[in-house]
Amino acid sequence: MFTVRGKTVIITGGTGGIGLTFALALAENGADIVSIQIPGDPAGAALKGAIEGLGRKFATFDCNIADATSIRSAFAAIWEAGTIPDILLNCAGVSRRGPIADFAEEDVDLIFAVNLKGAFIISQEFGKQLLKLGRPGKIIHICSMAAYIAQTNVSIYSTSKAGLLQMTKALSNEWAPNGIQCNCISPGFIKTPLTKALWSDPTFFAKSIARTPAGRWGTPDDLKGAVLFLASGASDFVTGESIVVDGGILGL
Image (cartoon, rainbow, N blue to C red; front, top):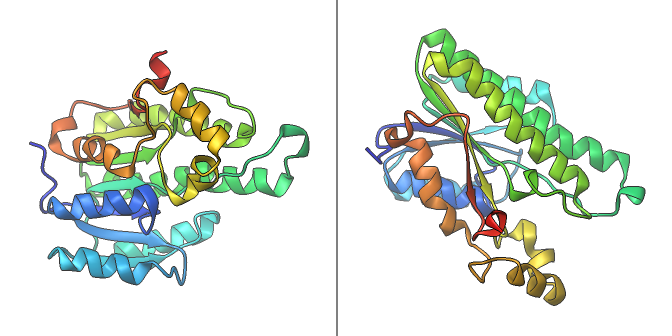
């Protein structure tokens, strides 16, 4: 029930942080990996070696997630290569911090382009192929605790993740009758390269620990159970949901 053996996972953001942990966890459990990544990603070769070292198939397709044309071209190439769509795991995301009054317009555009529009186009291309083939499938977005809490200095990031949360529900409402489950995982404070500026700040780190009932920051490994559940047949009747993995913060 909790297996992904023989399935193909198309993943964005799979070369680092949470995405890398997910790619390896899914491969360890029998999935083949198709990585959509930025051209020349220096971590791509290491990911390829790790996945193939686990005895699973691995393929890469270059893509700029901030550009809709690039996304569509990447998916056209993926389908042309004969990839069977089973699971889409969207881990790509960007964040910028700063007060609203000083927030740069180009940063607003980038965050929305990657975290929201990019996620939509990726889901659209994947879903269209499932509908064309008459196949069931699973879409998993990496959302955030920030979708629920409008924290200072991350106004646009929080807004983009709130939009992604609602998009997940909208995709589910439309595609669930076709056997396509759409869900998301909403992490709390997780130690990754993306969040280093936060957990390396002693003042912020202490405050974040104080507001986390579990008394610590999470690691990407803390999220593996959620992604394996949503990617496997165990979640076939779960759709339009967000699994919050935050050490209890939202329960306060």
